[in-house]
Length: 455
Length: 94
Image (cartoon, one colour):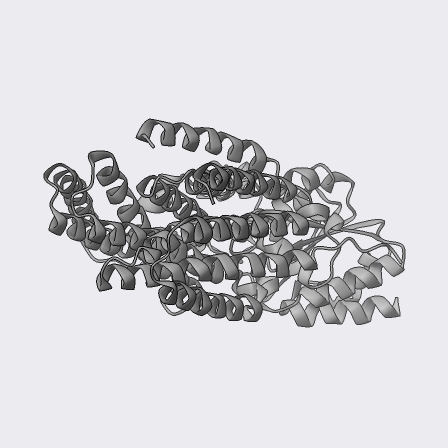
């Protein structure tokens, strides 16, 4: 295959990646879009194998076979609730691969040209940080490590010292062509990936995964510079951009800044709880709520992560179906941080066979709450806390929330009055228009299904 | 290829990425993340080139690890995204 022809095919591959991402813009075309991206990848891989002189097929066939097996098993077995961990792990693999490419390149040519040397260092550092950072995120999400911030006194100073030596050594490695300096840089990056993610609390993991997603793309782009390949640079830049957009959305939805997530430990446990549950609430029984729901014109379900923890996605769908059978209009309000990663709750509800055109994001649904008869909050807390709008002293002040307090009535299904991640009281519970239905999400929803059937 | 041409491609591709991905609705953000994650497995191309050169045992071992990791990323990423998107259906009202 001539060089020009293979470059032309790489261009086709790049175009297909972009078209594939474009089709992810609508649920109707998304699946075809993902397959288009997979086709683009297949073209790039085949062109590479045909146009390069391959000396060692054994290594390549073995690596592809092993990788395919592991990837296939992981992708087909994973539970939808465990999707954040899986994406974190895959980010790590991608970043790690880029670091290993740079390392192999360095072994082949220990005296690279200045331009190549710079990109080798970048690929090593970004790749290594992504590798270990992702695996700490994976361990936290999987529950192998505690979700609360883990650190030691003076850690910030140690980290700053490590980052500073990393930068100095990188410059040294590139300018003095010192191979040991490259390896030290790689080792420092591996350690920094661990020590930077350990102090980040479980609640901030959506931001971390999105950020590492971006980093894995940048690592691929850096590897593209190392081997002078446009397709790697283009695909890497696309992923880098995608990860940054998602990071930004998550950070805004959580009322944080990226630097506060990455550079300060915040787990929620240190927040002062204040007095909780001191005011009277209105308790309701399943029968009371069933009557209210069955005679409503419009009901909005507000699922939080508690719903997924209780595996109650099917129960909420059953309730919605029972209400729709009685002529009630049902919609779902999805806060950006309702799940454990961007869009996670939508996937969990889709798995329970809930039609995607009934799921509305924050801005869309907030317009509708004033004309909603009942907002049914299940397993959500901070994302419906009106303090975010009304109380300038609240730690969550300014965070975008779902305005369930604007609905004519609000029903909250909850085990107790205990606070959410932010560790603060929720004035919503004490409103005149709010009814509390105490119980676990799944049990309470099933009670409601039965009670609605009898109305 | 000079560094500057590479940077030009990088910056332009990033702009295309921002334009295209900003239009993806929040409903599809998880599949977007796992799908774009699979695309970052493009580093497989570099891994294949490095592993295929067969220059020395150490480089071969590193190449093998890179190919394996990148393949997990690619195969697993596309498959799990497909699995998720299969569930996104519009149900007609009965």
